[in-house]
Image 1 (cartoon, one colour):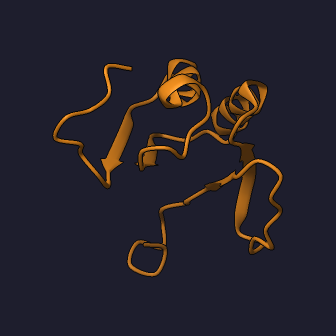
Image 2 (image 1 turned 45 degrees about the horizontal axis):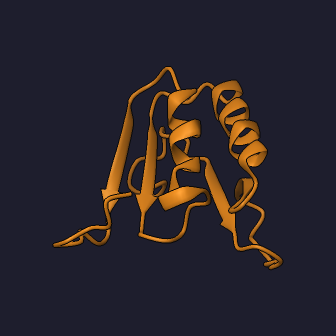
Image 3 (image 1 turned 90 degrees about the vertical axis):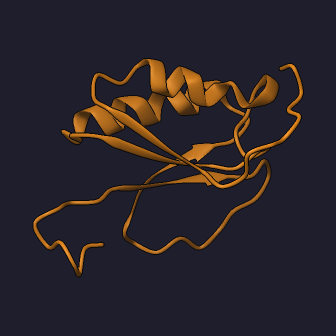
Amino acid sequence: MALRYPDIKVDIWALNDPGKHYAYPDRISGLINQDELASYARAARGITASGADMIWIQHEFGIFGGRAGDYILSLIGRMKVPVAVALHTVLAEPDPD
């Protein structure tokens, strides 16, 4: 996207699996630890401090922490800018959670 739209600044926040460490490239703006609710709050503060005009979340079932992945809702709830979500899988019969 940066090549096509050089005037747009894109920050990328990586989601870490529990107990895993990855060699992320330098362009990663921050890390969210999947099973740490406080990590989502830190990310929300970091995103807000960046001056983001919007947030684009890449959603896949099972990647976010909390019951049925509800930790991501704590991050979204702290945002004062529009949030877009790309749903990579839509379940025909989702769990009630």
